[in-house]
Amino acid sequence: MGAPRSTAALLEVRDLHVAYGTAEVVHGASFDVRAGEFVVLLGRNGAGKSTMLHAISGLIPKRGGTVRFAGEDIGAAAPRHIVRAGVVQVLEGHRVFHSLSVEDNLLIGTYARAPRGDRSKLDRIYTLFPEMAEKRHDAASRLSGGQQQILAVAQGVIGDPKLLILDEPSAGLAPIVIDRILDVAAALCREGMSILLVEQIVEKALRHAHHCYLVDTGRIVGEGPADTMLGSDALHEAYLGKA
Image 1 (cartoon, rainbow, N blue to C red):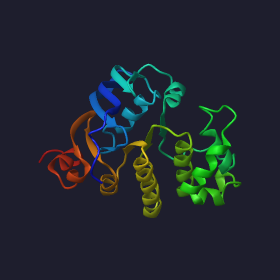
Image 2: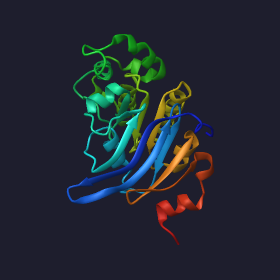
Image 3: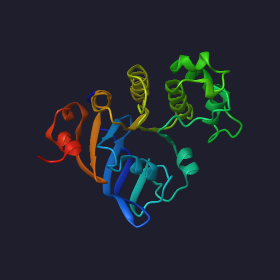
């Protein structure tokens, strides 16, 4: 995509350490997401990318380091406070409430700022995701896997976050659905929302992103403009190791 990096950092992660029990899996990672920027974290499975996202969102504890958002330290904040600050993570794996209607699922995404739901946000979401408008009264369980993932993303977007975090939204989906989700994310970024993406489909991710960080064994091992990364030695090494 090209561009951003000149604006101030919205999210600042510095020397992040995360462990599961006694096993440390993130070892001093540092990276930024700037205001209005689309950033992707790339690396092989098990590299620690999703763990970094969960630590930023407060879903798992940090062993060390700092996380600042919009100038405020959110490293020790509870997930609900991080959401209220403007950080929303869409978890991997179509995490929706199957027994509820599509519309009720969407309204849940507004609860952080409006405890009874905010129906005024629905029209914009139905414009962005017309397939959800058509299914608004259907139970989420009746949606296809791709539609459920679109619903999960829409549920994140409806809260108007300053930073939308997407954790492998392509998992198990058809290429047309993946393109749909990434195109909407890019459009939101053009409107000013920052995007932080973890993705395994490298070419599609780099085509939509401004900046890329490479992750290997819980460390940031490289970074650069997304449009220079495809085919680079650094990207090859992050996935396959040094020759």
